[in-house]
Length: 270
Ligand code: ADP
Image (cartoon, rainbow, N blue to C red):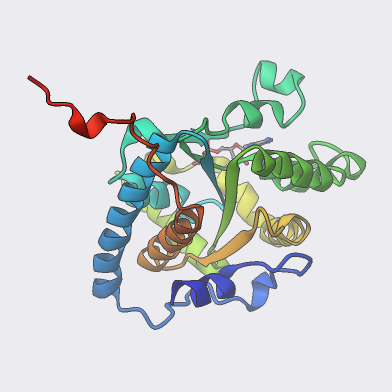
């Protein structure tokens, strides 16, 4: 049952996500071949619901993806959204702030990228970088980043109040799985373009990143904008789990087609 799965994945508001005790290699008893087939079924449901959300044009959905390097944010987006209408999906990848982004407050670029009514927005990294990488790299002092949890909760609350459903997934990989994936990026010429020297510097700070993630998830998993911790050592588990979170969220949103013009059924196109 999806709802049982979701309860298992969700970080209950006010509690810590207990990342060290969550199995990154979890399979939920799923079989790989069946899971891939089920993903296709889930994607068809997502496609049908996206059409309704787009037609309704009154609400939107925001999926936030955060993860350590090589946990598979790009792969998740490709696998889940490949079957949806691109006109209704808006993917934004947040990089190191540049230009005007540096001069504005940290939420400025984030707010501008939020989905419009009828859209599904996907954040590949997000405002959570401003309490994670910024903290680990000491880009701003603690006195500054520690206040951001409250800003983020209030910002997301505002989005929710104004019609955006916010759902957040942390792709949880093990340190060993990340090592193998980074090595693969070095060894495989087709994947070398993905490798950044900074990945190794960040990897050396693994405990600090995990601590920053744990604190961020604890402080910002709310009933209106919950965090889900997705076991991500196996791509097929990760993809299906995120797709199920999304499907459950969209089903509960239950978007409706707009009412047709009165008397439309009497019209014959000649
Ligand atoms: P990705 O790893 O997401 O595929 P990149 O290799 O271009 O893409 O990495 C983007 C980098 O931008 C990451 O190292 C990330 O930590 C950094 N970044 C994103 N947002 C911020 C921010 N607000 N402040 C500092 N660094 C950030």
